[in-house]
Length: 86
Image 1 (cartoon, rainbow, N blue to C red):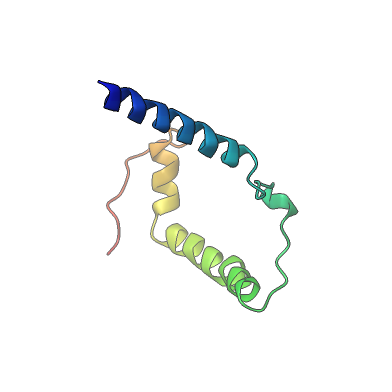
Image 2 (cartoon, one colour):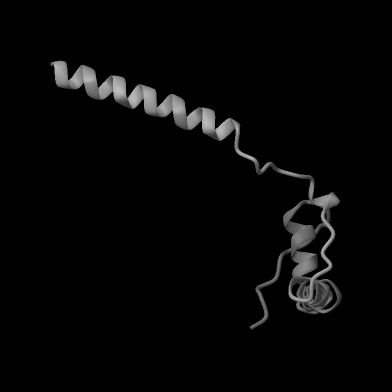
C-alpha cells in the first residue's frame, strides 16, 4: 500500500511539472494569414499547387460531371447523380 501511495505521489508531482512546462513552452500558434513564405523550397511548390494543380483538379471535376454531382447531392440542383467517369 505504501508503494502505491508513493508511486501515486511521484506521478502527481511529475504530471504537475510537465503541465507547467507545457504552459511555458516558447512556441505558440499563429494565424496562417500572417505567414509569408519567401524560401526557395516551399514557396515554388505552393505556387505550383495554387497556379496549376488546383485549377486542373477543378477543370477535371467540371469535365467529368463531379461539380454537378456535388450540387445534386447538396440539394442545390435537381437531377439524378451520375456514376464517376473512369
